[in-house]
Amino acid sequence: MMLSNSLYRAQERNELAVYYQPQVRLHTGQITGLEALLRWKHPELGMVPPGVFVPLAEKSGLIHSIGEWVLKTAISQNKKWQDMGLPHLRMAVNLSVSQFNNPRIVDSIDSILKGTGLSPEYLEIEITESIANKEAKHTTDVLNRLKKLGVSLSIDDFGTEYSSLNRLKMLPIDRIKIDMQFIHGIEGGEKDQAITKVIINLAKSLGLEVLAEGVETAPQLAFLSQRMCDDVQGYYYYKPMPAAEIEKLL
Ligand code: C2E
Ligand code: MG
Ligand code: MG
Image (spheres, rainbow, N blue to C red):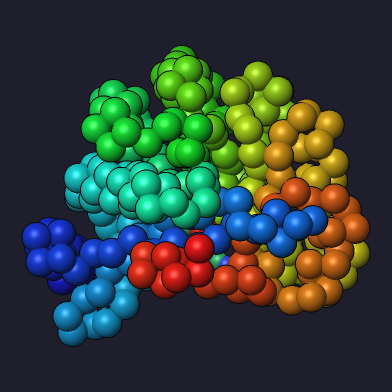
């Protein structure tokens, strides 16, 4: 209750921030993308993790205004970096279930892109398997409309929920992000290795890009490199950082 109430004022009080985590192309070591990750600096509690407050924001409906602010912030930041002459990168933004179900979501993304002038190819929308696999006309409509705008689409935390291969075949998805629980298990045993390998092969066979999340160690990286995973994201390379630090890095 307390958190939920203070979340109402967090936006006005400038307690929210967007951090960015680089995504790295495995074979070149080059940064090819950034993921926008929301942060809440609570005046008394310190950093509240999004895993805690995003579900609260979903329940109260605040996710719509907060989510729109994240989209605006990340998209205009990306445009600003491009205008400064920094490398042109893809900016990935997470969408939660209720944001996705908002009938205005596509128009809202379209108008933010037009307002900032960022070319849509530099925006990627991350959805979860539960959104992707919902057999609803709305889901297919929204994904097709986003695709038509020129935005790319990825499935986040792949492998953790129910997944339909038939849906994967039909939806206009560009990238699969392998959930970090499998990556963390690579050193621990053959099962997580097998799952990771299968997801990489599945993605490749369907002509999709594949990214491994939560890469922390050299052996994990070596395994992914041998299996021809395209991109990685994780503490091994970079943690999520505030905009000023990313700017220095780029
Ligand atoms: P996600 O989209 O799967 O984001 C990846 C999470 O993994 C981030 O946690 C990131 O900090 C963390 N991570 C990255 N590399 C490593 C690593 O090497 N090791 C470990 N242990 N963790 C790593 P974070 O920032 O706490 O975000 C958690 C979740 O909250 C996100 O998972 C996403 O589902 C949600 N979230 C974050 N920002 C937003 C947002 O703006 N909108 C919405 N709707 N959801 C968001
Ligand atoms: Mg994500
Ligand atoms: Mg994830």
